[in-house]
Amino acid sequence: MLTPPNPLKSRQELDAELDDAARAWLDEALAEAAHDAADAAATPGTPRQEASPYASSPWELRYAAAGRRCGQENADSVRSLLLVEARASLPAVTRLYEQGTAAERRAVLLTLHLLGLGDTALPLVEDALRANDTRLVAAAVGPYAADHLDPHAWRHAVLKCLFTEVPVGAVARLGDRARGDAELARMLDDFAAERTAAGRPVPEDLRTVLTLTAPTAALAPTEES
Image (cartoon, rainbow, N blue to C red; front, side):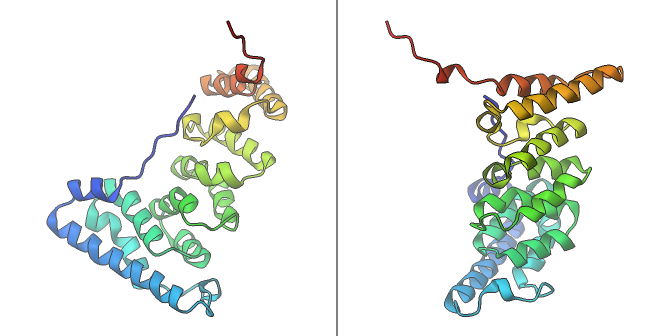
């Protein structure tokens, strides 16, 4: 079974890697995010969903600076922690995605499944899947997409990975969603036929997914001695 790697580090892992200045900066950033979440919880009559799309909280400014202050190798994890600590609303994640760099967009996509937004953030995933940036495509097919993309959109997301050479190991719950999917199998066969007719190699990942579309042995009667 393919298991997508988890690109996000825990707070404990970050603390072990950051120097004193970066840890202090992160403490302050998370405190600002928590303060924003507490303010929102204290004023439930004013939903953050109605906030201006151009407004920003102090922690959102920290979000943009994460790579510079904590290192690019830690930026995804720091940004994810900020989003979770702030209990980021749909307007906030949309704003950070639409106004952000590719790296900032990637962190949003990697964190969507932790924010309790239901299917309301699907437009962000759909936007990423229209891009040709493989970093965004790989982030877009994570747990949030596995939970919320409808079958048609999910199948096309898998094909997008094959087209852009994003390893299908990035696709969350690939085995579960592909199992017994005859329509996905047909689409994969068509794609393979097109590649062969064009004299191009068929990706090994395509064969991997095609195998997963078959009903599993677990669905057959179990033999007992």
